[in-house]
Length: 244
Image (cartoon, rainbow, N blue to C red; front, side, top):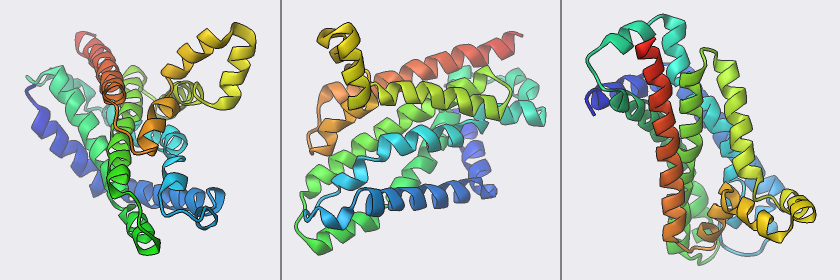
């Protein structure tokens, strides 16, 4: 795991040394607020909880988190530091985890900045704060899964635009697989059993229990396993650059 700490500090500094992290956080919070207050009809529910807030997380993560991760490896190629980075005596796993965790930290800052919404529902009523805390925890795990897709694809291509498009397509597949419209179509064509199988791999399906305040071990295992799988692919694709 050599190089992990130095890579993490370097990448996190790169996010906040430029307008990138600040623009990402501002646009992400604005979009999340609009979807929660307007599309989610937050005040019309008459219930003091954050259901209209969490329901949009998978869909917004699908767009915003690949945008956050697309630069992790493509920037090295664009600035010409990829050859130097690959020649350093540091392990590929340390580089991969350092880059991934730096993006994950920025996403976590975005979630922390939404805490005023949590305070708002406490002001309006008496919500189940344990359930809300669990939903935040699983949402953060889910964010790591989305970021792992973007980071891995970033190591596969030298273009940020290409990395973003491919990452969003992959993220869309794992998000929309649990969408009722998609499930009903799959069920009509392939049957209920296959539709249930497809739904198990969906981020929406996995996140549903957390939105109800239920923490299931299979959900934690799924998101951590998904992130580890794409981190492993990231190592393979980054190693190809070192061998090449």
